[in-house]
Image (cartoon, rainbow, N blue to C red; front, side):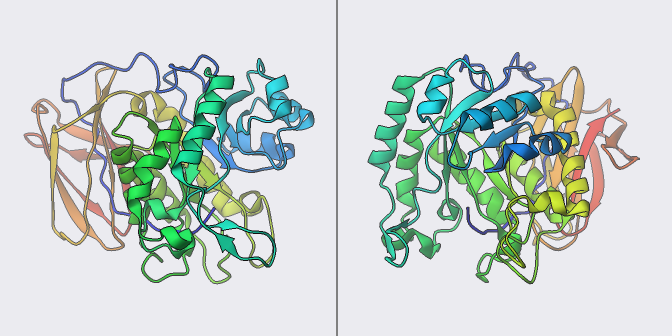
Length: 388
């Protein structure tokens, strides 16, 4: 995994009177893939010890992605005991457990789009090229087509200037080819702790990467992304709970259908499970995950386009919108895409009968007049609305 940044976004879920609730989530096409219910939204953690599975489950995590030198029989047994699902490599042990419902997906090696190590002290060679990824994907699927294949790419998805791609730096045209080799396309960039000024603090890079993956997959594949929540390798700063919430919701608003928390830390010392050692961040991540899980049926329902617009008192702070409807209720989820303040005025179509919107989780309501409502956004704020 690597380091990156963020966008200010506005998500609006509104009663447009269009479409119907989705009968199932995006994973129903795979018999042995992630759970098919509309109430399941993948919230994962990257490369963690199964011994901590119960603690992650308590924090709202429902999936492991990657297992160190695994999977092994012991790792799978521990995850099964905790009721934790896993996406892992298709090794011999995994194939011996082909009927084990704990395994819900397969994965490539991490970040094949980055320059590849030639061994300790030997430097780096070129990235693994897309044809190899596609060949590997076809081999994995031939062995087991009942589970999706996840490909996690590096920060070049969002940032063309990422030098870690070596000879393929500034070649975004590689990515539409890479994503042909997967069913779930994911990436990582960690702007809050990034060491390059072009990215550092620019949380919107997270949303940019999700947007690009959605475009490159032509909306035909599932898109996930990684979320920072520790110092990683930055001794001077880490993401705040507010920034983590912003990254999560800008990701979802731009089309991400699964999240992977990156919880390792190398500074001030190595800590594989640093999230579990940070009481404040763990509490915040748990609250974020609980809210996502509660809203999963809405998040898995169809997005309704062109039913809301937004104007801003400060146009330097973009606000993006997305509309949904579930069980007759109207939802508007919103996130600010820059580190400044603005007042957003939302105009909702076909909402003449709506008089107020509840701000979910904030213990307040907003008046709606002829389909128009206003709200204030501080830096990187997230507001989620539901009609009363």
